[in-house]
Image (tube, rainbow, N blue to C red):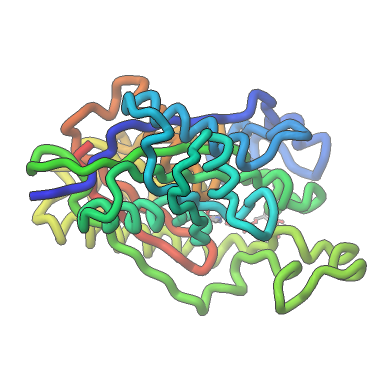
Length: 328
Ligand code: UT7
């Protein structure tokens, strides 16, 4: 059986650390509140002058290095992001240039917010399985520090910057590879989490900028409730589709938005929280980058090992969500 296998992972996170204590000097918050409500202690912030494509290409290069594949052999690039270098063109084409790929390989962005990496991986999985492409680089990257309102304590304490990547290649056999992916969306959730300005609905004007319509707006509570419910359902769907039980799972590498969301998912799915790889305390919510950053860390720490059964799941703006079951 032909499957798409993750041949290598990589990540790139900025050096600059912003702690909860730093934030408590900027807005009315505290380390205690943020840590208790979310599990976040600090997040990374990209320095001025560097961009989404810088971080994305670095993560992509590292994934290629791990896979021992020259980046110039990549034949398709998919970048999951809601914070590209610019609204047009796709940041993936700039990543292609920064990786030195001259072979005109297709490069495009996927916009599914925090579920973006699962969406990107699902597309890449289909491309590899049908034989269309053989070296597909999937990158999740966000520079959310440039899109949050640093005076809004409801959102600015949650997000961080970073990039993670996975290189997918064909694999013959049952022992490794992506077993299945499952994608979902419910557009009735648009009001819960969005950036209202800067598109065709509210083109950028002085007024929209003054009203901060170009920055992230979120109603945390409904997103939280939907996240616990839908991530759990998607995780169960992935297990059922493959005849697996929670006991079969070695690691859960889920979107790191809030530790309490993951604890809720663990309880609903009958998966011990010890099986969840957790790094939210270090990076906060890096949206589409959170799963590939966590996967790369877990692999390099020797936690997620070749052959392990890894369950991935995420939910974000849209609402969009999904899951994947992978024999790493
Ligand atoms: O990646 C997908 C996208 N996002 C998410 O998954 C986020 C989902 N939502 C959440 O994680 C949680 O809803 C939050 C962490 C955003 C908020 O936690 P919560 O337990 O739902 O708190 P809340 O919004 O109900 O706020 C409780 C109180 C409020 O004060 P009052 O009205 O009770 O006086 C807030 O104003 O906490 C206040 N508050 C804060 N206090 C200190 C809100 N943000 C802060 C803050 N520091 N940063």
